[in-house]
Amino acid sequence: MITGERKIIGIFGKVNSGKSTFINNLTKSNASIVSSEEGTTTDPVKVYYEIKNLGKTVIYDTAGFGDKSKLGKVREERSFEILDKCDLCIYVIDLTLNKGKESIDPIDEGFLERVESLQKKVIYIARVNKDFKKDFYLPSLIYRGEEDNYKVFEIIKKLLNSDSKKHLLGDLVKEGDRVVLVIPIDDQSPKDRIILPQQMVIRSLLDKKALISICGPKEILELKSSLDKIDLIITDSQAFKEVYKIAKDEIKITSFSILFAAFKGDLDYFIESFYKIKDSKNIVIYEGCFHHPGEDDIARVKIPNLIRKKFGDKNFSFTRNRNDLKGNDLAIICGSCTKTSSEVLDLINFAKENGVYMTNFGITIAGLTDILEKVALP
Ligand SMILES: Nc1nc2c(ncn2[C@@H]2O[C@H](COP(=O)(O)OP(=O)(O)O)[C@@H](O)[C@H]2O)c(=O)[nH]1
Ligand SMILES: [Mg+2]
Image 1 (cartoon, protein in one colour):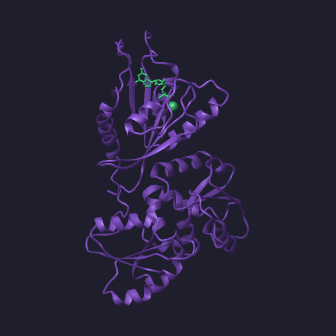
Image 2: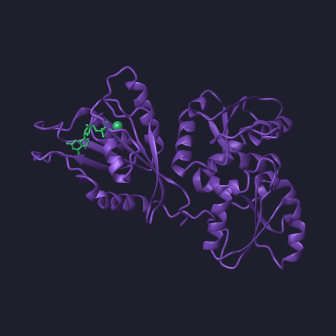
């Protein structure tokens, strides 16, 4: 299984239930401000945290529910954005507040119903005081402080490690296969490193005990002549056309973004949506991360130009905000290397709910260069 993805854990609960105290205790940090003042945590606070035998996580502390101040609603919205994308939520309930009451607080109940309808994994953590007796609501665990951290991590691991053991390469590669990676280095490449999807593919190939060679698009011909055989080429989508000329129909070829569309997204929906470009008037291009666009930026320049050339002019807009997908016929999203599967699936669901088709950069490029039918799918 590939574990290169950072899992997202969100901490939720009513104002003053002890969320910030909990994240600080759990991560042994002072990440979040703790105070008896309601609404102390405003924007979500995040802590990057490596959990042994699970891998990278990001843990968010969020603004509490039931905040009656002027900005309370806006803060709650931010918390719900985290809820939509998280892999696991930890709900902190202050049972001392419920003292003497027979039933669960309506705010807690409302949230828990929402979590259930989203089918999120959830851990309920209860903070209790000494005279807490009633067990009308059974939490996953009673948290008294740092001494209970190991219990929390055990539950987190149990819930998150049981996630589907999807393999990035599917059945495309087997032990001993000779795989060539084509990675163009140009002024769009990040300085001095290769990007996360490429790192994850390399790690995944090593797990499969494949034999790996790497080169740029200009060098592939020479590399090919030096190898007895090539079982698969995985290329950056931007070099698809060039590489296909060399692979022809003799060598299996796929791209990093196709692997990731299948791994993190919904490959069938992306392919179906690609064929809707022709009839779409309003197309929004969605980028996951912040970067300074170069002159030949793939999102802003290359893809719109390829589409115009093939299908005539369209209304293009560009965004990093999920809400801006609304009102468009089609969205084209980036490779989502900075996003987790849950975030990409959240985006796809949002698009579907709003009647927007969605595809990604790699599928679009493969389709527009007429090789979508010829690529190997994981
Ligand atoms: N007695 C007691 N007080 C706590 C506990 N956890 C938090 N508090 C107090 O409750 C108040 C609110 O805590 P905070 O972590 O800021 O709550 P948040 O609004 O959910 O982030 C602070 O005054 C904390 O000191 C606990 O386990 N026991
Ligand atoms: Mg707080």
